[in-house]
Length: 234
Image 1 (tube, rainbow, N blue to C red):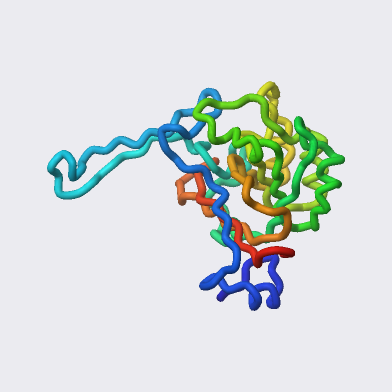
Image 2 (tube, rainbow, N blue to C red):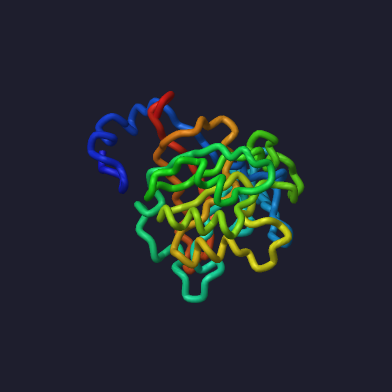
């Protein structure tokens, strides 16, 4: 099995992708109940052909925002001239990651980032009350969610992570028109993963796989995000 960037050869030897001890799917299902950020297109799947209609196959079409459900934000989302999906090799979306629990019920600030005990160079994934309360399971957008402050984003950036993820549809608060956390992270080339469900994921170290669709010129993409680990005490 090829090594994943950021993993030691010993870690790769101990973790076998053919027989993993721990896999967490942290993605949202895309269906009629998937919440959408205000102003975004809701997910819609339309069936054109089906067996029930007497057709000899099933055929459907999809309509959705690039920021639908669990998705990646690339720098081009907010940064003029920023990188897009095609500017990255696939291994850029396969990274060592660390999940940390945030106790603050409102925001992730500098203190919360420090309390996470993150190792430099790992993707930072924040597990907040958003996951505990399953706010992403509600069909309508929930504006009362835990978010990352501008100062918190700067504290994250100081750790030089390849990616920062949160269990909300946006890393910024809903009343921040200038999107400071987005601009701070994307401006430093740090990819953002939004809309993850960490309710069943224990804190600890993992390998994150979050491959985007190969969208030409894409500034964002839905992903099937999974965490791979070695069980308790990882």
